[in-house]
Length: 341
Ligand SMILES: Nc1ncnc2c1ncn2[C@@H]1O[C@H](COP(=O)(O)OP(=O)(O)OP(=O)(O)O)[C@@H](O)[C@H]1O
Ligand SMILES: [Mg+2]
Image (tube, rainbow, N blue to C red; front, side, top):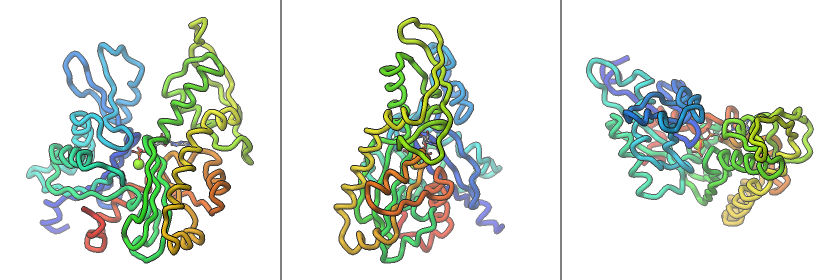
């Protein structure tokens, strides 16, 4: 390692609504939930990431508050986002040398981000110690992470279903030709599940339980080849107020999540109809690529394939595709420079 590279540290960061990932030297060094826990009496940050997530809903709200600084892919709480970014950088240990290195960061941002929102990301990273900050659009990063040659004159459709947003983009020649973003993704699925339990089973469940139900029996289709076993769900009876348990089937989940998935499908159809014909012809051959944690919902790929009559591929390790692409763009800065603002 040359002296210059010792003092010039480079990090790639996918700051997500649900999870934040940091890549250093081509390796994922941090992968933590985007949660900050705050002691309300002293206003001090007491935990970040998984530790903070474990505290969610388990403490009196007078003592402790857990905050998710991002909503729908963008910073909703500026101060907490700054803490989150600073702590994530701190966890990598790269900024802890005797002389502070000059830290260069590439952060990915949603394609539909406003100037104000983009400024919030930039300022948060600056306040957290980054000296040089570049941004890359998430669908572009996802495409690079999937292994698509984004610089080729060939159309590809990327659908990134994260926690806060589903982003759809058609990419060709290193640019986003058309895109669409809906605020319906993993978080909305969890809310749908909570609402379903309340109205159909008179049962209140917490966010963490909704997430468990989604992972265990979540489904986009009411008929699956590999049927998961019914899931024992614990919560509180709405009428008696007593704790109770109910077994939930994936068929019920397909019903609960149906209308949210229809909204994502509609956004995909809208994007396809806005795609120039030559690129649409390419997509007919190449199909649709899914990334993001939400793409792992059972049967979602099949449902989208049936709706669009296109082949649908799920990225390898879809939760990390965007981060991986951001890291590759950082590493090949010269080649991808024009993609990075
Ligand atoms: N097996 C699974 N089935 C369904 N959903 C899943 C699964 N695994 C993870 N998820 C969901 O994926 C979401 C997180 O995905 P991801 O990390 O890509 O989002 P993010 O990048 O943080 O969010 P955004 O891109 O919207 O800012 C969560 O809502 C999580 O519940
Ligand atoms: Mg994401």
